[in-house]
Image 1: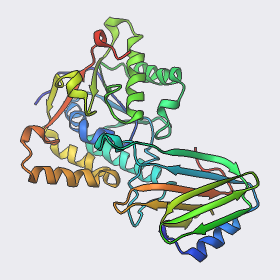
Image 2 (image 1 turned 90 degrees about the vertical axis):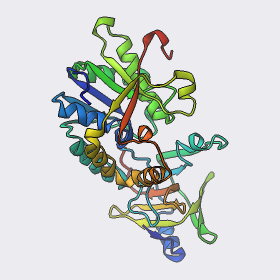
Image 3 (image 1 turned 90 degrees about the horizontal axis):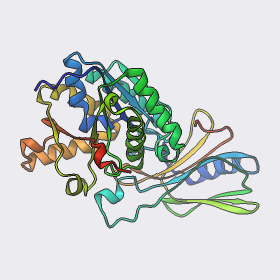
Length: 228
Length: 116
């Protein structure tokens, strides 16, 4: 599938591996089409719980492990503009709201994106996800309407489909399946159990449409139905 | 990290007593606990780089162990500790990992601040 052309795509998530399951195929597809992609990752997932038993890392060595995984994931997707924003995992929502908006404004003014991909506030489960989406949507809302980038938002809370309906954007990313697997495998310290889950779901007769390697889905953010 | 050896860990706890030390303490059942099971009441706590001075540090119980630090005017404790390590920076790292390898609790003591 050829995706519509974009000037620049800005992807903003709080944790290394947030991109892996939901967006890495889309990112790789844009890059294959020659569209520049910037991936800004707010934290290094310092508070990740998957440390193994016996442990393969400690609370203090995990950030380096996950940084290396993030770099490997970026490589797998073909991302050359990866930005690590230096916040700490699980604290994003406690940062000053205005400072967060400024961070997003700076990313936007730096990259001049026609498309931003982030989480859908209130429907993204992890407080860091919601806080990231919130800050980005506030930043875009302040722009003159005609200059705003389109926002593709990811929602996966248990009530998201009930409230938001089905995602309106569906990307067939089969041709980037290899890159997507590369991204998912790059984050192996955190994704091992999800990869097992994927194999199990396939074995349990998951339909092609549901499979992570085939499709990625987004909601076009609609300011007429703003979250605040 | 390795499985807790009671005598060795007790020795290390003694080595950090009676001086100012930086503490990292967290308990968590994960940000997704209530997403996967809506009946879960999700609670946790986190402090990092708070300075304390304890007069007595003690390990108690069989694995998973409990660690208590008695302060002149209070207490710090953690339960569920399974693993420990004195890392290359001389920091005492203790953690409790469940059967699936997920961290459930961490208590760390250092003479220098932990990174951010």
